[in-house]
Image (cartoon, helix red, strand yellow):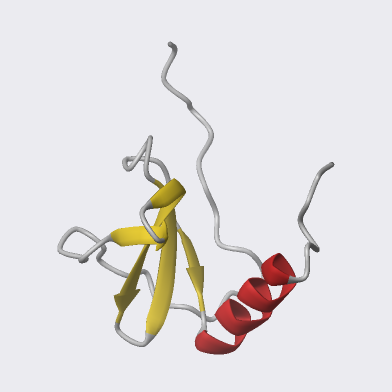
Length: 80
């Protein structure tokens, strides 16, 4: 697979620090099932693809995380 040459840039209004996730304690996102892992780092919640841990992580504030989890529980992201 060819290496990506796309540079990631922070979004306008992005007010989150560039967290060092190298020492994060990653845990399964859903009782050990699924394809995601989460870590709590410096007051933020990071989410990553457990199958590709080297890929970029999504970082949530606690309020964003609450809204995300609430939406997921209500089926907001179901694609079927």
